[in-house]
Amino acid sequence: MSNGVNQVTYDILTQRIKQVGNLPAMPAILSRLCETLSQKNNQIDIDKVVEQICYDKSLAAQCLRLANSALFRQRGDVATVREAVFALGLWRIRDLAFSCSLPMLFANIKGPVGKELFWRHALGTACVAQGLGHELRAKGAEEIYLAGLLHDIGILVNGVLFAEEFGQVLEEAMQKKLPLEEVEQSVLGFTHAESGRILAELWRLPLPLSEVIEYHCRPQDQKTPRDVTELVHAADLACQKLGMGYGYELASDESSSLVRIWEPLSLHFPLAKNLQEETCTQLLIHLVSEADLLADHVFTPTMTTGQNIHCDSHSS
Image 1 (cartoon, one colour):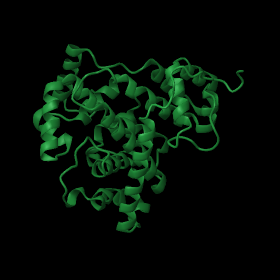
Image 2 (spheres, helix red, strand yellow):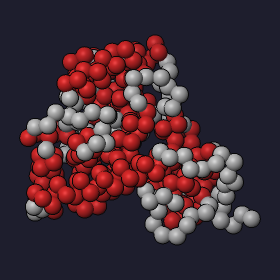
Image 3 (cartoon, one colour):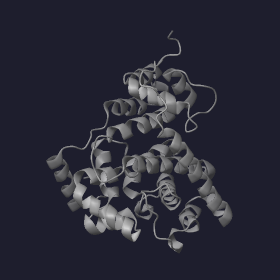
Image 4 (cartoon, helix red, strand yellow):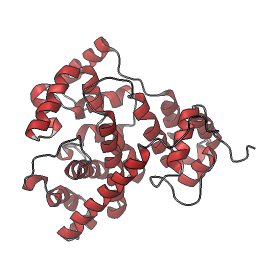
């Protein structure tokens, strides 16, 4: 075992996965896309990327819709998948493909977690973390959005593998207004951060991304502090505090205030240290508000299934 997950927890989860056997595999399109993009930039075959996305017409349609949304759009209308690749760049195309594919992946799995609430929070965390990364000039900018999108993937794992117990976790967390990971540890003996890390390994996600998933609740435990983990942690808490959480508000105390959420950032990022408290809180409020509006757009089906999808700008 190469990660920091407790061996007993690791054995319990892997054994349960074998018993239940219904955790979704990484979609083939995402595996192929990650494999293609793992090469050096000058060796990536753009035509292959376009072909991979266009192979799944539903995904291609969703990608075009999101490429023209405020979430990804830069300038001008994007009419083809090839145009989207050139307009947005390869890393944003990967982010976009994950944004489209993962909600569909878990759509038919029954569990105690509301799917739209989950993906709104995931999207919110991704957008807020990315916005913070831009403001604070963080390292690893190409990782931030996807790390935010996937940070809580272990919640879906727990909801699938331990549906009854996790239902109790949600109920207790809502009643007592406690963080999920605190109640998970009490009821299950492990948290969604640990089960998320194991799914990340099963999906063969890159190691830095797997580590953000594992340490996003407690970035101070990560042996080598990383910008992305700190950003996702702060974005996660800000979204929960400002109405993009899991349907309940955490108990209000000084430790959960926006100022306290910002404190670890000020210790980690030189630019964050110099900002006034009011500026910090207003920035978090602004980023979450923007993310909330974007989520409204993303989760409103505005496309007809019969739309023709153009993959290559040279196609007629």
